Amino acid sequence: MQRQAIALSQQIPNLNLMRALWLGALALAFVLVQAVMAHARPESLAPLAEQISPSVVNITTSTVVEGRTGPQGIVPEGSPFEDFFREFQDRNGQGNRPRRSSALGSGFVISEDGYIVTNNHVIEGADEIQIEFFNGDELEAELIGTDPNTDIALLKVEASGPLPFVPFGDSDGARVGDWVVAMGNPLGQGFSVSAGIVSARNRALSGTYDDYIQTDAAINRGNSGGPLFNMDGEVIGVNTAILSPNGGSIGIGFSMASNVVTRVVDQLQEFGETRRGWLGVRIQDVTEDIAEAIGLEPVAGALVTSVPEGPAMEAGMQDGDVIISFAGVDVEDTRGLVRQVGNSPVGETVRVVVFRDGETVTLLVTLGRREEAEGAVPAVAEGPEDTPADPVTKDVLGLTLSTLTDEMRTELGLSEDQDGLAVTAVDETTEAYEKGLRAGDVITEAGQQKVTSIADFETRLEEVKDAGRKSLLLLVRRGGDPRFVALSLAE
Image (cartoon, rainbow, N blue to C red):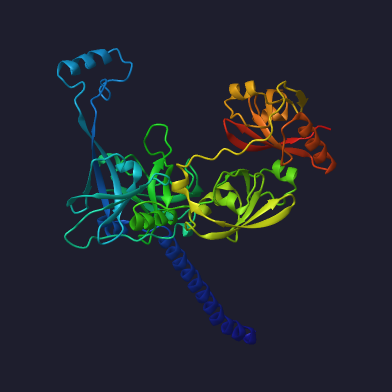
């Protein structure tokens, strides 16, 4: 009994030691959790706001507009009081008098010598641009350049000394759930801060080069052109648009990603304009049925629907090619290709790998400049021999096809040398109708081969069936715009 008591007394210190170690570990874990939570959600954003506020500016623009034709802004259009107020304006000589209109926006300083970034729509058409700084100073700004494609504008002010500015951050490093801060001049209320998180990445709205960060930080009218900051005080986006049924913030705002903005700003600083690479093709995404129709695996790339005169044509690219690699980077879809080409230097020669007739072909393309090409008129291709005067028709795959006649070309607004088969009717119960084919469309290719007659179409159809394909790929033109459509073959 005495021996057991001695043994127990020896174990008690060990138990106390273990309990102390366990409580110490628990306390350390609690401290670490608190530290992580404090890092994830700072107790206050005041230090960050104090740090970045001096670099954010309010922008006021002024524009002289022609006299109003009616009492807009006073009564709703169509109101019974509209005629009364119009008569009142005319009687007082205000009906046709030019007036000065003002607009508000935001921006931020990116260099100590006075370069300022904002949205193009904030300053578009402005006669005067006034900058108000956080300390109350006001300076007139000069417009350096704009890029409507990304809605970015670059301004410049001349200050008596160095200005506080903010750096750009890496928008690609922003993660969904990261904290962000938006600053600007919402609804003309002056300098204002709102906070939220990154709700989504890589959003596209309507532009060719869209790469928006979606955030629930409050963004309202007047915030346009203002910065979206990360917790390090770096600009990762330019607040540009909101999605709202009532014009106010409902927690869905969009900021153009900084990695897009910096490229634009660099070119505007150097050239006063953008200079984007241009490949010279019209493209569409590759769908599963299109990929099956041409034997392409995996389903990826950009399908070339048209090759006008330009860099791609000079390099030997053809209608129906699928661009699967550009400058060593795999092409996932058309959006990715357009952005990559646009970010490439003008005049650079790049390797472009295309999928053609079941094989890959490598082309060397010297890129042109997109801005110059956008105003060019495409050359008209030399046409084939005339088609018969009397149309020949055939019903196939839910389509009623007819050879083109001069009368049809005139009715459809086609050039005299346009070849192909006219779609004169579409069965509304078929896949062709579901995929958007309509009467008035012109089919110029079937199975990636040109068709000028019903016999050509039937030959292509048999070739595709003999090859074991489950669908036939058609190149369809409507109003001059080409697109590929894959139709399943009926058993």
